[in-house]
Amino acid sequence: MALDGSKIKANASKHKAMSYDRMRAKQQQLRDEVSQLLAQAEAADAAEDAEYGRDRRGDELPAELQRRESRLKRIREAKRALEARAKEEATVKGAPAESAKPEPKAQYNFTDPESRIMKGPDGFVQAYNVQVAVDELQLIVGQAVTQETNDKKQLLPMITTIAQQSGATPAQLLADAGYCSEENLTAIAETPIDAYISTRKQKHGERPGPCPRGPLPQTATIVDRMTRKLHTKAGAQVYAARKAIVEPVIGQIKQARGFRQFLLRGFEKVQGEWSFVCATHNILKLYRLCV
Image (cartoon, rainbow, N blue to C red; front, top):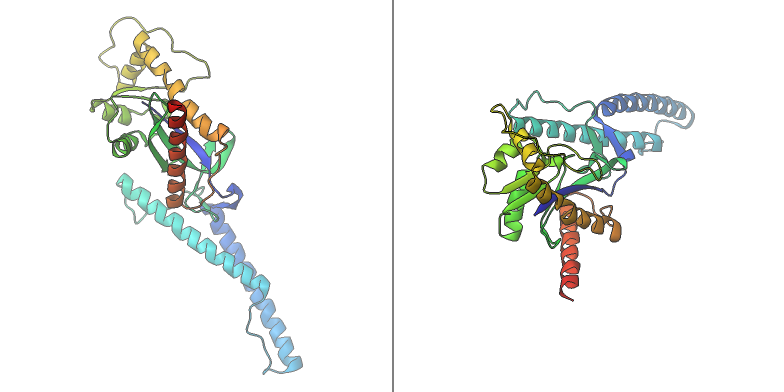
């Protein structure tokens, strides 16, 4: 079984995103503009009172003032959302939540606030990170959507997801370097799963070098041990199958069927949409396998 992740564009433009630092500057700018517009409105009101009398006035805000007030409200809501997110992240890390503040470059998208800026093959995009676990028949046996910008934290959750969605824990699991960390390798070593996880990003067409001779030194880390495992003749042969198992599935979904962007907005709806895409893939694959 092989595991992989891919970035799928959200139904939102990255140009509709704003950083926390930019929000503070824009908020002050809008406050100044609102103050100026109110001063102008008071001056105009006083002039009209002098000309037409104080008993004749309008109750509606000028359009320019309405637009800025609305923008201010949305920025305040976005700031609160980023501040709440920073507190949640601090709690997960075991740090004090009360003093947690968003990073100046922390982004909030006004079209789909639950999507994230992520780096993909074509540069930075407003997206979600989708995960698939695929068996040797190229059937998807586990799928999920995450807001994490990389795959580092998805290895163990996806093993749980595979067990929940397919009813079985994989005996063997292949994954690229995006899933490699000392924490992940240590955790999966404590399971019965025979894991083959690349310890470094390989260039297209690159093959692992020959296995170094001699025993591993006692100081070898768990990453060193996985590197040696992948450099053995048997390990290299097993890991080489990953490209033929999971990568074609991502290609079939994104290239052959053209699914490169979600239609729905919001994390929960996007999860449902991705589930539907994966189910469709399995139906088509089973059809071709049976006819």
